[in-house]
Every structure is written in structure tokens, then in C-alpha cells.
Length: 489
Image 1 (spheres, rainbow, N blue to C red):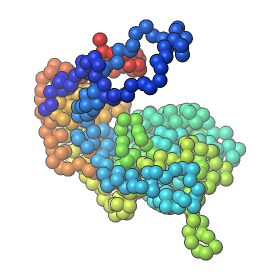
Image 2: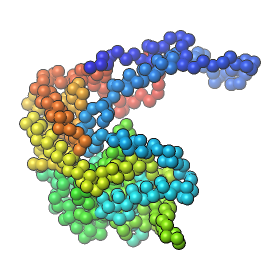
Image 3: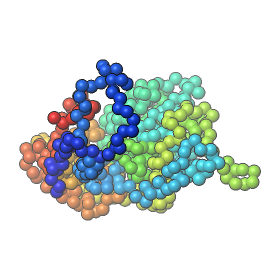
Image 4: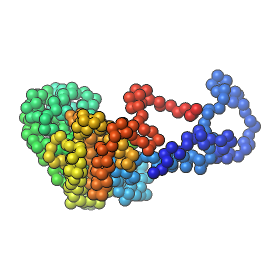
């Protein structure tokens, strides 16, 4: 393993007089800065910036990059995040001339190839969702949620209905209530149930004529398919409400089960998760939404339509739905990620999409089974694409927490799974191996975890031991972030 302490700071590498660029001598008479700027605006001394050659800078940042974990370098089992390998073929295709250099203000006649591609992407997403109308505009999953809720709000306003509530399960992603609140709704959280599914009686107590939307992730955050989803949908529809399907876990059911077929009225896609666009570091993302036909007039515009010319040729153009809520993003969506998703779907084809979901389910159930002796799963005998194990017994009996395990995994060259989410599972370790990982990788990950849980508790409390940073103060970092650069003293 690389000696991670060996990478020196830029300030340590600095030597007076070193430069990455040599400028020619000025061919104009020198001018004092005080002749140009007020003296009060001038510093007494030069800033303490490091003085370096280009080679110093390049090597420093390349060496720093080797300390990072990524899906290209390590197994990344982040539950609910779908950190899977991104095919480089799709990266290359997205950078082809005529795609990467196309300007959004070019006229439709000059953009027919791109418009056709995006129209076909709309159609493929509609087929996967079982919902006929799609907008590609939202920039990420959370914005897709917000956009769908704004669409629902416009729908109810147009009908003269004053609906104020959005309901969601206790295990929902945190963006669900956040999106609902930003859209102007009151948030109602259902109590957690013993079996991990929606409690139908609790749902009935909270759903009434004031309910606009029930937001549900299916499969849910515990990796379980909501067995009563059609009943849940009927409960909402009986009071005139809508069912929103959070598409975060779509990769478990794509090609197998369609949200529109089991009662969903709206959903978002995470193209950067389900369809392998690059994921992480806060972006880039893409969160298209699909809705049922009577919600289509309220979608954000523009959307892409296909027309037939008088000579029988097809023509693609941008149109704005009749009662559109307006734009939610500049231009037409995150085109670069949408193209990668399009290439992914065209590469796999319909049979391949189904196979990918089946492989994700197989990998998750295999990993769950080989870890069951040390990290039991409180909910469900089987899972879909992910599962939530618990380190509660280890914590109670030996003082080993989920965080201890996660930090120690870094020493073994594995990224940690999601920890402490969802909150309904104590000492949660949420794992999603994805369909792109091999049996050998899953076996190695299991072997590492089996070694870790048998290590000394105090040793684990101090992990990781091989990294340049062990355990930063997360609370201080959140409450007192350092957002400005200063020279290392």
C-alpha cells in the first residue's frame, strides 16, 4: 500500500523563484500600482502563495487523486446510491463531435439528430415507467421529486382543489419531505412498521381529501418490494390523491415491473444511478420525470415532440405543454448524462435491462446470505437490489459500531456502505453491490468484514489506520466549515 503520509503540501514543495510560466520582459514603461489603484486597496505584502513549477503542481494533484476511492478503483457498496461501474464506451460516445459541441441555441433544423436521440430517450423512459409523458428537464433526482410535486400542485389548482398534505413512510429518503415542503405542502410521516412495509391502517388514518400525494420508494429503502402497492395506490386514488414513486431504486425492477402498472401516477428517474451516468461528488445528475396522461399538460417545458412533414419525413422540435409549470432548469436538461443513459439503454436492449435488474437482485441476496452470520438483516428473508444489515448485536455485546466497521473497511481497500440509514434499523449498514460486481469481489468484501468483526474493539475505534486522515470531526466540519484557502503555516 502507498505510504499515504508521503504526499507533501504545496507549501512544503514551494521554493522562492520557481514558476510554471515564464513571461517576456514588458515592452511598456513600468507603472506604479499606486498610480492605478488607491493605496488603501493595496496589500502591504504579497500573498503567501506557493511558488512551484508546472511539474510540481501536476504531480502533487495526481498523487492526491490516488488517495481517492471511486467506482473505477474500488468496490463501492453504498446502499440506495447505486455506485456501479460506468461503461467507458458510453463516455466516448457522449464526447463524439456533433454531440459534445452542439449548442443549445442552434435551430431545430441543425439539431435533428440530437432531438431524435432525446425523443427516443423520452419514449424509452416512458416504456420503462409505464407512464406515457416524460420531461427530461430536471437536473437530478431531488429536483425531479420537486418538479413532480409542483406538477401535482398545478394539476390540483387547475381542478379547484385545495390539497395541502404530502404523506410518506418513515423510511423515505430525506429528499421526499424536503421536496414536499419546498413545493408548499405539509409533510406527514407514517410511523415505522415492524415488518418494514407500509402500515395500511396507519396510511388510511392519514389519507383524506386534503392529501395531494403519497410518496413511496418501491422497492423501499430496506430493499423490499411493497407487497401491498396496488392496495396503497387504491387508497390514494379513492380520495383523489396521487401516488409518487421515488425512482431511486428503479434498477431493481427495470424491465420487470412498471410503476405505472402498479398504480404510480408520477415518478422520477436517476439517470446517473440507474443508467450509469457518472455518480458522486455532488453530480452531475439527471432526474427526468414521467407522469400519467392527464398530468402531461402541466409538465415543465420544453419537451420534445415528433411531427410528420407534408412529404412524410419525421421532424423533431421543442414544444411547451399547454399548462406547463415552466422551466425548472436552463436549456433542456443535463444532456451529457442523458446521452450516457441513452447509450446504456441502447447497449443493453430490453432483454439486457431486465437481465441487469435480475443480476443486481442476485448479487444483493448472495452478499446478504454470506454476511448473515455476522451482520443479520432485521427485515425480510429476501431482498431486491440492496439490504440493510444491523450491527446492533456487535454494539451491545462488544461495543463495535456500524461506524467502526465502515471506517475499518477503508484499510482493506473497500469503500464503506451507507451507515445509519434508514433510521428504522439500529446501527444500520445499507449495502448495494449492484449488478456490475463479480462473485470474487463480493467474496473478498465478505472476508474483510468477517476479519473486521473479530478484531479488537479499541483498535476498531481508531480506524482507519492506513489513511492520511483517520476520523475527522464530522460535527465540527458541519457546524464550522472552513470555506476559504489559507497558507499552511
